[in-house]
Length: 193
Ligand SMILES: O=P(O)(O)OC[C@@H](O)[C@H]1O[C@@H](OP(=O)(O)O)[C@@H](O)[C@@H](O)[C@@H]1O
Image (cartoon, rainbow, N blue to C red; front, side, top):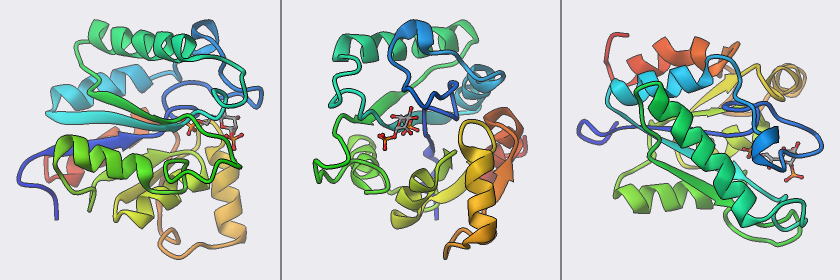
């Protein structure tokens, strides 16, 4: 069930909103929107969605970039969305590394817990868009509706899921990009696109 009219959507960042890199996205200049992603976010927010990001940013703990760099990336995201007539509600990030045993690094649910607390809502049934298995698994843990996109690492994730099916993701919705997923996302809360 959704939360009495509150339309929330949770997006992974690297590989869903912006181009990803195996060398990490380390600066605002390296932060390059995937075609259609900014437009999709703007259209969702105009359709009444609260758009939030849940992203692992282990590059912070690895010393690859600092908080100023990260905030510059997210200021660029917010500005681009505003220039397209929409708004970004918030970015929730995990700054930790793989060995830090935190609860916020996806696939752990801590980022989604924080989103629930911030907006005093439940993530049950909330569309969550990712390109990595860990994105989708974090969503499954919290009862989100997982959506896979083929951008970033998504095509590889899709192949992995075909080879090694994961409970709860056998029939996961797959789209070429966030833009292509837009009509499905808009319809999750019963709003015709
Ligand atoms: O997809 P989101 O969560 O928005 O962000 C992922 C990034 O933080 C980076 O996560 C790293 O994983 P490790 O943190 O090294 O396991 C690598 O996959 C990088 O290629 C990637 O850019």
